[in-house]
Amino acid sequence: MTSLFRDEIYEQPNVIRRLVQDENEQIRRLAEKLKSKPPSYIIIGARGTSDNAATYAKYLFGMFNSISVGLAMPSLFTIYKMPPLMHDGLVIGISQAGQTPDVLSIFAEAKRQGVASVAITNKADSPMSLAADDTIDLNAGVEKAVPASKSYTAQLTAIAAIAAHWAGDSKLIRELDGLADLVQEVLTQESAAKAAAKKFANKNYLVVVGRGLNQCTASEVALKIKELAYMVAESYSAADFRHGPIAMLDNEFPVVAVAPQGMAEEDMSQMIGEIRQTNAELAVISNVDSLLAQCELPIRLPANLAEWLSPIVATIPGQLLALHLCLEKGYEPDRPRGLKKVTLTR
Image (cartoon, rainbow, N blue to C red):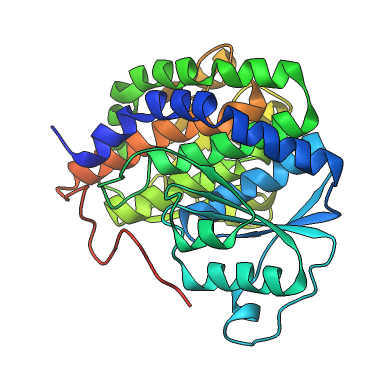
């Protein structure tokens, strides 16, 4: 089995290693600028997969930099022509291609209001980069498959690097330096992801559950399954899932639980226990032995994975699961129906 999507999944260790090394100086300079004049808050403009990266940014900038982060509502800038005031804030745009008109409209308004802006993109010469005061080039190389893989984890890595350098935390920076090796290690779990795909391939519905930092992982894995396997794949925070949606579960509605070791582990352990009572088929992406032992379909994360970096690593088994669900159902992973590589929303 060969596909561009699989090839690009396997490029991710090198992409992340290159980003951490090559963009280090640019990220350090940006961090120094943010330290010298901290914004009062951050507004992030993004669409699609990049929206999930923005959710990760909300957590990290809040945790390590004590900054409130909100997602922009692009329709206020384009359809309604009633943008909010953004004084004393920072606008960050996250986009693979840096071309989406509604995200660009946020940058135009930021410039009009005299607000600083940063572009995180895989095209350093894109319109978004040209509009921004600072750019972090993901340097992931051309992504040929329609579904995003390496550009997404590169976005998360860029966000992690900005947060770590802005915090000036040497421990975080050291952990970031070892990230590429952890990504390489998790690629050994393709056979486990394939086993889960075989088990779930005759189903039409699926739910992905995470908590805290890995809420973005749940959303991204569900999106990839929708894009590639055409399943109704829903994502939930474990907290929200208890408020009603858990009632959907039965033996025809499988669950993927993202539960790495860390502060959210206890709640995810309780969630997995609740899911098991429903008779739903369950796959668990984790590095906690007791949680992996509770399911028929364990997918193991590296043992020494720091929770704050876990969304970057835990996303990759989800990409492999989506790939193998696609193949098990007889679909073409590189050209999912109805999708384009660059979607120009307005």
